[in-house]
Image (cartoon, rainbow, N blue to C red; front, top):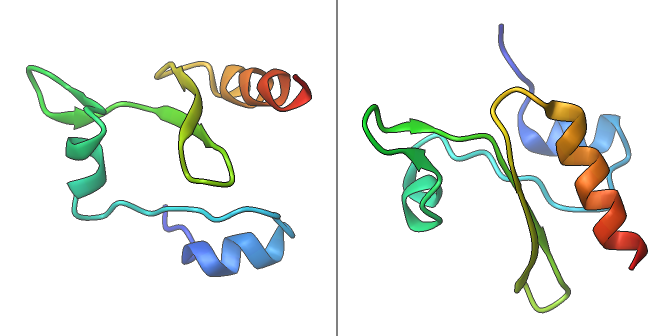
Length: 77
C-alpha cells in the first residue's frame, strides 16, 4: 500500500493542521516513539498548541479511533 505525500493528503481531506511523515525515523527517536527491543515506531498522536508545545499524547498500536477520540476531548477543553 502506498500513501500520498502529506501535502496531498492534507489538501484532499481539507485538514486544518500540518502532518508529518517521518521516513527517516529521526522524529521517532527524538520523541522516544520506538518500541525498545525491536526499534519499530509506535503509533503515537501528539497534540501541539500554537507554540508547538505538546499538550496531549495518545499511544496505542491497535486502537486508531482512540487517537481521534482522545485528541478531540483535549481540543474541547
